[in-house]
Image 1 (cartoon, helix red, strand yellow):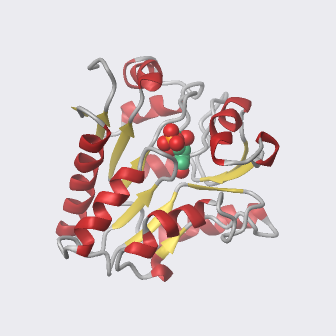
Image 2 (cartoon, protein in one colour):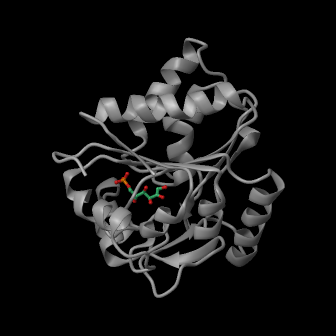
Image 3 (cartoon, protein in one colour):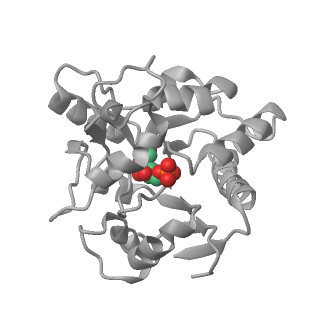
Length: 239
Ligand code: F6R
């Protein structure tokens, strides 16, 4: 595990963007696993800037996102497809057909989960997975549980996740209670993982995840078992 301390959010974002762009420069056809939420916004901004300067080329890159709310269609501003288009894909030279987000509007959610796993396999798995961490230790929407869920699945969001995500909605009652999330197996099969953590509030859960017991009650703790994990964090104290 590589632990990289960033002095502020800008520093964290540039460091993460440097690692992702190195991946794409070395492997122009890379498969990037991407996250939504507040943490990666700065990373995406930096990558957009470098793409505009032609320092990094996304034309051959494929992306797979971690998760999507059930019941929100791509035109809904709170959907993760909308987030990705507006915060990243619309501003870089990626082929939109090569960007993948689970379909939260699928009639048969179980089928959609199977389709998503098959898709990840068919593109050869993920070369580099960008992750954030939830306040309760979730990665993607793999919430604390009694066992690690391996494959893409439908999840009931925990009250603390709904509470944390209400900041993006007008009303807490508007926050969807179900999501589709990539499973722990697909995440762990990524050839490299970059976890970005930008908050003092997450210091304790990050420490527990990286140095505590590996347990499904702290989903991010499984990352200890990954052989190519980079953690970039910006908190008041160093780990
Ligand atoms: C988002 C995702 C979530 C977030 C996590 C942290 O696609 O999978 O696990 O990474 O909830 O969210 P932020 O960055 O908003 O604190």
